[in-house]
Image 1: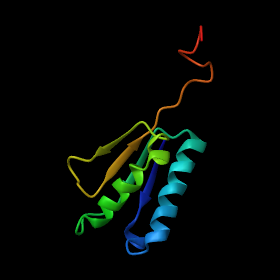
Image 2 (image 1 turned 90 degrees about the vertical axis):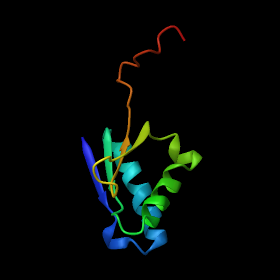
Image 3 (image 1 turned 135 degrees about the vertical axis):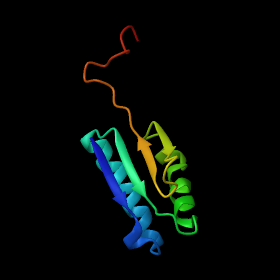
Length: 94
């Protein structure tokens, strides 16, 4: 499952950006989505940097697996999530 967040409409509203980013991370976890596509747009690059700073926060970084910058479109980021199976794969013997 993939979730998409386009930040074009709120590009100049700092607190709304942070809330939208937190909401999409929470939604991905709740729905066990494996991928979130975030579109800060190309512009000056300031919004993309803000998104990366948000994702680099310690409490946020522990929630996802990795961030990938789109090589074909530098105005887009992918946040990858990993979820363990319900059987607790890899946890035996602990």
